[in-house]
Image (cartoon, rainbow, N blue to C red; front, top):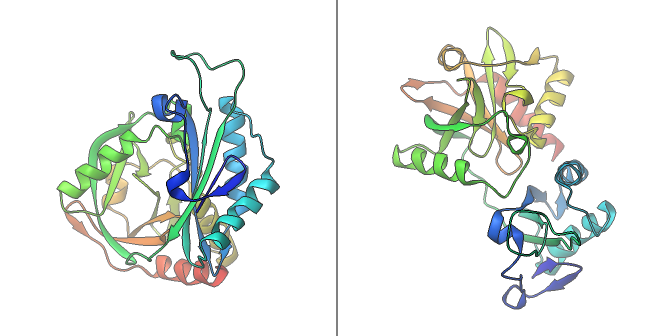
Amino acid sequence: MIYLNGAIVPHDFARIDPADRGFTLADGLFETLRAYRGKPFRLADHLERLSDSADALGIPLLFDVPAIAEAVIAVLEANRLADAAIRITLTRGTGPRGLAPPADVKPTLLIAATPYTPLPDICAAVTVGIRRNEGSPLSRMKSLAYLDNVLAAGEAAQRHAEEAILLNNAGRVCGAARANLFAVIAGRLVTPPVSDGVLAGIARRVVLELAAVLKIPAEEASLSPADLAGAQEIFLTNSLFEIRSVARLDDRAFGPGAVAAKLRADYRGLV
């Protein structure tokens, strides 16, 4: 069962117009989050980001944020899911042929949920050749135009790694194909700033909040590949796998990391 434009419907009966701009032009946004014991974690934060991005793109929300939150819960209940991955997809809806947005926008809103099986807490990563355009506003949104990330993940898989680390056009580290990046350097926790082409991840926000509570020195600062090579720890964050330590980046191995372990334990304490 999924939610589509105001109603819970069976997956097999759902219909999206072939002229929907999300399909033809990737004109839309998405959010991915996790539910624990039937309760979505940081749902308000995800919906705030969705709303802000939709406003920046000029996509109206036909349903207000509380109504969308209720729809998320309804999807979980309809599918009898406790631990789940939730995806919220918003498109500009249908429009005539061409790039110009339609004058009468009727957006499409779809919410789906599936069971989620946690990933291992460690992974191998490689730095890939795909570059992120830090000058594009889409680098700071969960846009449906995700092919750079798809290609990066494919390159990582071909090189027998689970995660892909991307640089921006200036050669600075911006994160992983599906996650934000943190490094422990000289005892400080560092994550690239949004201005380097970074999505303001919700799990990233949680980790920075936890670091403040735990009195772990933390900052947002640009990182180079050399900075990563000299780091004591590297870990990735997203709303599904939480905190995942990088055990190997390119040709260098890293230990499990005490900072990541402490933050992971406290993160799981929150959820």
